[in-house]
Length: 431
Image (tube, rainbow, N blue to C red; front, side, top):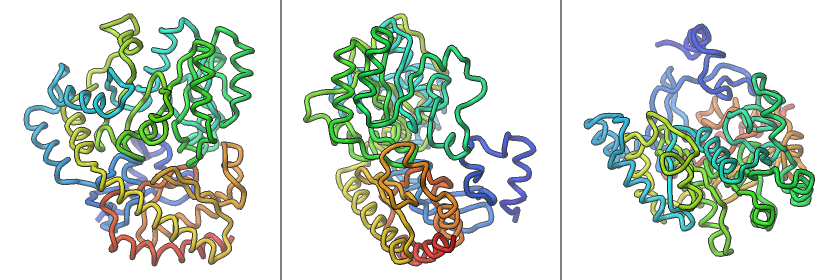
């Protein structure tokens, strides 16, 4: 049997850093990445045959658990007809109709293959609609790796300690205004300073790439009001929250009864059921500016491919109210176990959550933005992480990420967690 160490050495010879996405390289926690070999339900198995309770779930999409029978059946049935047509197809249409039916402000959906593409398209659409160049984003919010959105991007960038990224031109960077999260006063000031130049504000509905940050009361609604007053578009990134924190995402859980809506929503993760799939969605007037209906160009050979569409549709159809109730209960139960273990060992910590999405910060202070998230004890997290891994628990290898529960989590998995967490807390305390 080939070891993870041997596989990683091979990978570094043929892939930059040995990975296809930076956080996977364990740069923040040290050690050797585990190579996944298979997964089923709430369990993932590495290349050495060791099993772990999976609290990453492919970074969010596996809300039903890995290899869910309905999703597998949909993928197999569809793939037998072809994995890609490069043409309109029935699964794509059915998924778009499902999303339009589920999310009230959405009339049109444009599928892409990644969240990066979805948000990039939303920004381009906002610029095309307004004739303006500048965008406002918030420090620590991650919206993919397109040039204009990498500034102070949190998540993998924060994990690696990179300020931004070489290769982004000064002109692109100059069109991005980065503000501290939660400060409506500074948003208003930025619009005043650049009157008539801001095309859009882009924000995560619930920031989850600097760890989960609970939006201040009225913050998202305040962004809507400021954008409307200044003729800019509001882009709400629900790549992580969409169809995870509820059947209609953050919008359905927190916004729909308040009488306002963002101009554009972006989706990923759950919407593809674990197969590459994302989407930008919104009202007909704005969305119909996209080609071929309008002049704003966007395209993708594999966008809306039948296998990803079928997997996403099967996931949404099987994400019943009972599933979301179970996700919420499992998250609450897990958070209580973590808090008890860390408190018993005297480890300073904060647990932020919005619905079933949560993060553990190794600090005694309240965490409300990127600056406060960066004050946590990342070394303590590293010890905590590796002990959990040794004890058969798979969590994200970064203290700037969310934890993800699935409907497959049950008593067997919680027995493993209840045994592992006190040991991990002792390791965290040893520093």
